[in-house]
Length: 404
Ligand SMILES: *Cc1c(COP(=O)(O)O)cnc(C)c1O
Image (cartoon, rainbow, N blue to C red; front, side, top):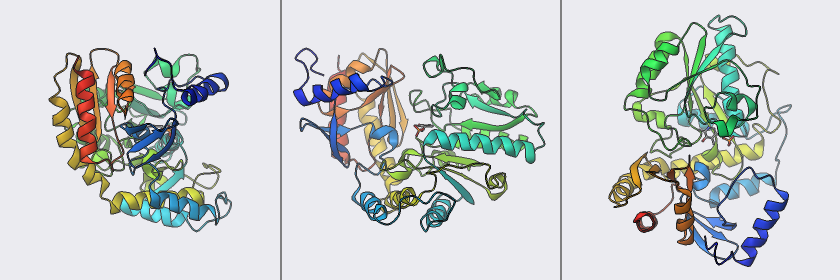
């Protein structure tokens, strides 16, 4: 963005500070955001941008949603943290609301998405030992090539991306990887030691990769037949993003375990959760798992409001309604660079034949923020409150930038 002419002074100042004092584990676009509302953000220069990333689908409800912010402020003035050594009056209500909304018997609250994935892994392993009689220390979990489940040491142990793994070993054993979307490979990988299959309904980070139609339903059936738990990582695909509260619903699949994060708090506060049945959740006993901040009253109050906004504003249906027109608009773009346009709801990927980064930079100058994923894919995942007109305008910016 305007590299040749240099960046505006305030923007440059903040970038310099961060380059000087921060770890360089991200390579952000040179836009310094100072405030946001709905689908729009404003930088320190006062320039406005349509947010087409939506904080990796954490702000499905829109930036600074007034009801969620009000819940945060109100709860912050009462009590923020009790630890789980004592009970608080928000967690029970959050548990009831989330289980009721998604149709699960029990839930376990954590903070980050990766922690929720770790929780699901521990739960599945212990279930394998206690309920399936797998020999101690032998349980295996099947994962998919190109998965993204977070950044902890165990999770990067089963990543297929050298960028996430290199230099971080030794790795946690007990994971077997199969090609995403390949049912035969999954069937062949299941052994008596397999306790679970961990999968994203759509591989968002990998480039919005969609499995063949019917894959999830068939995988769910296979897991049921072979006594393997299906763990759906819905951290990015869940909570309305693809048109349903869970992307698994597209194939009428009810996973044994659903993992949520990101939009669970509307991007206001880190809240994640694992949902499952009483039978599976019963492997946890007091002391066997926990987190100081997990289930804290501030998080629970925020998440309750975030869930209520999803329901009251019918945001899953909104994602579904906005999807078709946007996809056709993008598919109609005449561009020498576009290889494919795919997606579901408002999780859309434009796969290019070259690096997507320069296009992101060009879009930013035009007031559209989006970020490449896996080098060659432009991901479009705006807050679900975005207007049809704003999306239409964004699509015309994509069309002009990609025209060649
Ligand atoms: C973002 C993400 C995670 C990790 O969540 P964090 O909050 O960053 O730890 C895990 N799985 C998927 C599918 C994600 O998109």
